[in-house]
Length: 436
Image 1 (cartoon, rainbow, N blue to C red):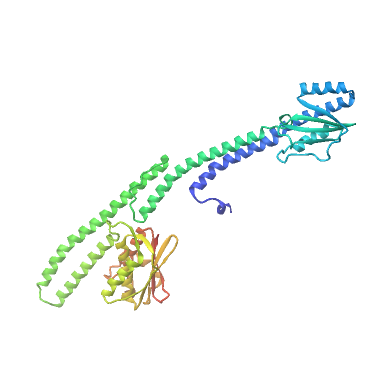
Image 2: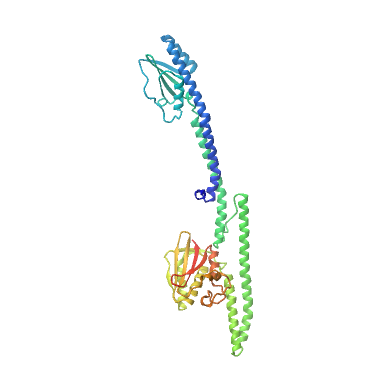
């Protein structure tokens, strides 16, 4: 149940792991200091001063002579650091005058009540450096002024200041250090995400802790292996295509020199089919045009280009693309994928609709038609290379079973994907989802 309240980002979790124990430790120390040490010291100080006040009060009561009382005042000032005077014919106030910032007023009040038999009043608000105590005597009041640090432990605010200051300083140092460590992880994640979207991210350099550097070097090595694999695959199939074209051309020339006959025409069709197969294989290997870099462009412009090319072949489809919908992708690869879906729809349906929807994190491109559609059980198999479905709905012009495989490879190379579903127009809906 607590997972929903915990932070999700690595930086926030590390801050929680490092900073939370610091503040818990400081809180425990503060509690122990205030509840045990400071409270005990204050109680002892208050009890000492209350006892001195009680002693002087008794001496005043036992020595009514004016000269004796003057001697007592001098002795108390010299030996006890208490200022004392007697105000004749004056009574003590009814209500104590207490400072709201002093949390130990009640402690001193208990000590005075325990030590004195006379009525008393004390003031912790009026004098910053003193505490005023008045005791009711017969014929007047006895007024005491005691230094505040002799009544209460005054080191508490200083302790809190240093405690809070060191906590903030340690927290700030930890946050700065953690930010630098997490930044290297975020740079690695951004580089991996960029590479997953078809961007090379050549500026990435491993930084940070040893483990993060090791992961960064492993990512770079993996990226180079994938790039070499793609280059080798494209080069191999390009070479195979080139090598196959030469004998195919010779066969075509030889067949062209032969008189027409059913057998020769069949051979010509076989050669033509072989040429289509070679082109399909090469197109599948080059599904991302290795020399094309992703760039930002208006999606409506590329859809209009597909519509213009389709119109020249005598077909028209419906377009509903919002203006200003900017996408970052390989322009030629995306155009070829949309063109594949549109041409397939026009081959098997009367009408085709192309629409798009921009969201916070991705853009969805929909290609709908009103054709016969496809059984949902074939949706998964339709994406497999070289898989040929039923003739009513084959997703490749040449019949090699590479149509949706090419479209899916394009989408996944940009960090997206392609899904199939039933269209609201009755046919098939192909959805290309690409990150923004």
